Image (tube, one colour):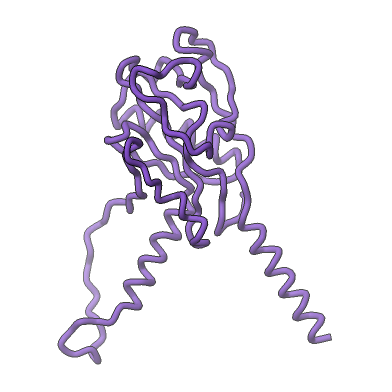
Length: 212
């Protein structure tokens, strides 16, 4: 009876761990029909993610390789990004069963949306690393004195220039504590429009947490 109960618990834990590795399903986003046609249409954002391709270069972006966000989003500043673009993708991902965190990368002129759990696990890992480090003090026997720390900015996830992109996220699958899901939304200075490449890098894989 004891062995049977133990086996059942182990099986339950295995099922739970398996449930923490999954692939994002459809993510519905409204975009313009084309660069010159403002009528909205719905696309599946997931179809654009995980192709291992760079975003189209400046001057080569068109309706054949880009989806354009609504023309009302014709500026690239913190207010537009935080109040209009972030909520659009955060809500769409929430409907798809997970929460994302947004960071702007000026070099790329892009917003990177990453799984929130990846960021949280990364911070927890860093705290554990700091706690395990030997203390370099005069008297190690003395307990550390608590200090008030200034509020820190969010830990920035690795964002690389597409022209020289080794993409650290590609190696995240080797570390099950970090959720590798991410995608980018780009700004095109020439047309003054935000866009999604038809095919971009990124990852649809989730790990370390369950589907909501």
